[in-house]
Length: 483
Image 1 (cartoon, one colour):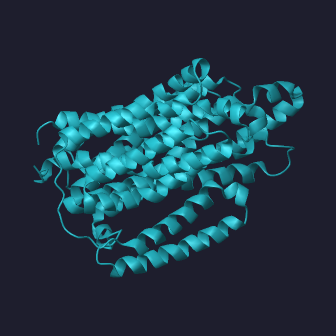
Image 2 (tube, rainbow, N blue to C red; image 1 turned 90 degrees about the horizontal axis):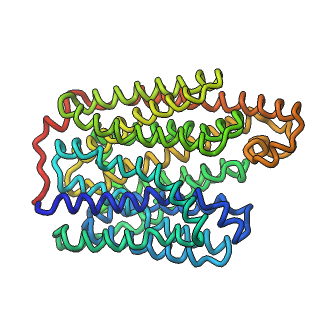
Image 3 (cartoon, helix red, strand yellow; image 1 turned 90 degrees about the vertical axis):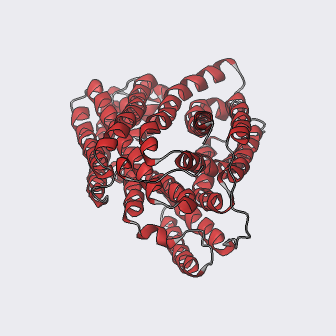
């Protein structure tokens, strides 16, 4: 296909648009809360976006198989940009949450379909080589996002953080319209509306229960039960639908099944570092925000480096070798983290974070290439989306489980939230020395249990790597992209 480098750049810009969204908004949230108020609702600024994104990922993936990648990506990007523009105009926190939900409804199309387009235009061997480019988008966004967010809120209105993606989105739509000559099959499709509704209900209830487990209390189990019922109904619907939203036969392929289970596990594993390591560095060690950000930046940098090296390695080995190696590295870093933190070593924590990032980079990129290579072209959209979706569900599940471990370990013996007290410099400075020592010790102990729990999840992730079929790699397939 001509113009493949230009199409690749357009897809990378599309991914960057989604990747930078989370990091740049997180940096600006204090300024947004100061302006709009509604501090008690600020968690929904992230939750509404992630909920809408998670629900729509599989739906967009299947629609891309039925109606063409370009058309569905354009619709999703247009919704995302509309939501982004409205977020910058939000008069209050409730409106911002609603616009973030709209933004998330479009975001569900961006990553899986951009990845699918890359999978369509490159052979498996070529995909292995360019995974480093795709992963570098996330590493770059992880470093640039916080810096750019801090600069914007310091020198401009916070609205700019939402509007900055608009020109990028318009440019990517224009580039793909010009350079990606897709010709989807022209035939009538039987849209699986009941499956789409059941998918929204099942995934929506699941993600709401996971995101809001602490606030919901015992109601969490009720939502999980209703979600399970909806998933059973979805399974029954997909068995009889003429063009199912989720083709059940897809998961009879062992490569695709192992890729989805593995993505679920590594999504859960990474949250022990990305969600809780900055809390430990700032709250327990008493170090500034920059120290915690540095650890995550090292993780984000190691990810694409390992992905690039892994792409070359899988060409001469196999998917299984790469994934098992990545799982072993991930387990080593996850077990190393609580050990070095017990000794109070910030450098050790940075090294452990980088090792974890390397393991994640090896596993995630290899899972993506292997799943895309195993799927037929007419099912590559939903296969790619399923890998993205399971990793996101894993991240939500990991956050909920590890957060529960933290809360159970801390118990109710403290006035207020001890973690928030230690994280707030003003509150921390106001504490008597003895009380500060007591709080620090309690949070230190609880977070170590969180990190060891993350290491246990890493054991599961490492064990699941052995499900990957042996003897298959990008250098051993004869698949070619469609012209």
